[in-house]
Length: 144
Image (cartoon, rainbow, N blue to C red; front, side):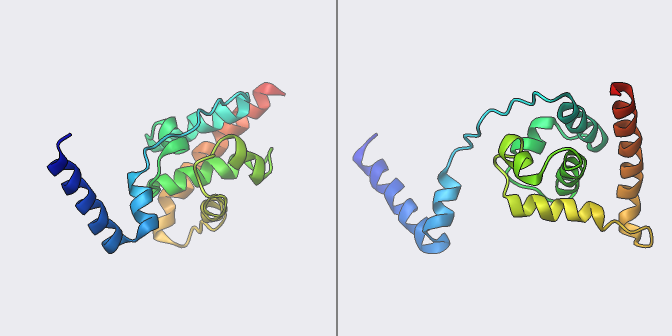
């Protein structure tokens, strides 16, 4: 790299720190190096697969995506909701959702608990929940 390019990069970096602050600039510069997550438990795999199928979101996006907006947060909420039946939240966070904040996982799970039939916006997610409930119950009954 030429010296001029290096100076230009450093100036842009300094401008970014001035505008965004040190922490936000660091977070922006970090590459997404996520730890590989092996889903060994059959129930965990089934839940992740069912939720990703219902929401048309790849399983890797559920586990590793940095941005959770709209349907993604509900999808993660459903995963945590169903997985929390068999495992504590701490274990779900340590083994599956390593890159997610534990309090956000709690908040997304709470979205599922707070679904209300009287709210028009929730009807879509209540239908998804009913479908997922059937799939999860069928899986449980097949394994018993």
